[in-house]
Image (cartoon, rainbow, N blue to C red; front, side):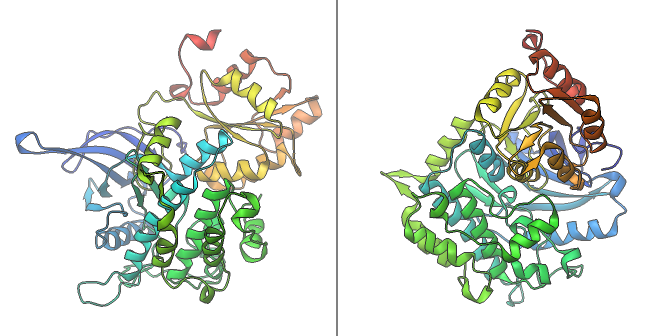
Length: 464
């Protein structure tokens, strides 16, 4: 992290090129995502998303090349399940992409919200999302350039955070920033140290620098497996552990974790997750063909079911752009706090204490917490000192090992927070240690002190 936190809103420009900037949607260390509007004659107006390299990084030649590659590749893809590139430009020395605006949320945020409620998507919803992503991938993999030659596009970063779900139940694939294609301006690096994409969603062969369209199908299998079971298949406390699991860990059929999954779905997911690329489906179209019969339920369309799900979870009012971390619309949205405890009762107690001021996400183990944090970065973590198979301080260290989570405020709840224990916890990166039987006002006060003032909770309920 640099001087400015990944979570802190940056100064909002009034305009970028011909676009009026409305608000931030998301931000990161190198770029930001903005909601903007273009207006024209006779009351014409259209909202768009602008993904802009931050001015302080505009001289980073490699990052600019990635932006140009993303624009060149995605601009050639015209498909209803792929977020469209509208324009690539430069304003005041900073490069930007203008993209289609999707009103909805990311699949990662949807799965996180369901996990916090101990719920999962229905088979109909899973089949719909899988088929829509499959159609996007099949189109991209088969796409030819203006010369008639295959573009040989491989997304390389198929994951829940790169799947957007609109409040009408549409599903769109986004972020071709690390895609491999014949038309790339910059060469792609090989080897474990330069692997592209998220480790937990990589095909095994990508760790050796080998990649083709079937690598995307393995990632699609991981996404479908997670939707069916509610659990990320490959996660771990550090990169080495994740790599080991990607390469060697047993891959259970979805029905082993979710008995309601039918045999035909087990079969297609197991085929997608074969470690030998030759054993996987040859095309994403095979996935679409296998799952399409499951995309309706009692006469109700899957898109309608999914739209209702977003509304039920309160996710349908969010506008999401491509890449980076999605954030709620409106600057006053309360921060998200990840509560980690094996005990459902303790999680409920903490939720009751803070839910009037913060949005609460829950995890039962350090492994699950790490997966959630990497998928949809929370604003703070409250964690019990003892977790299944590890300690709360071990989780804190694992979070600190991820550059994107290094400054995440971490509060530890301990049965016996004696001075030596507190000192050791602080040495390992814990921001504050509180008694397990914590007072509500004390906990709220600590959270308010740790989170940026402009994003902290407001209102009369805090004083109650």
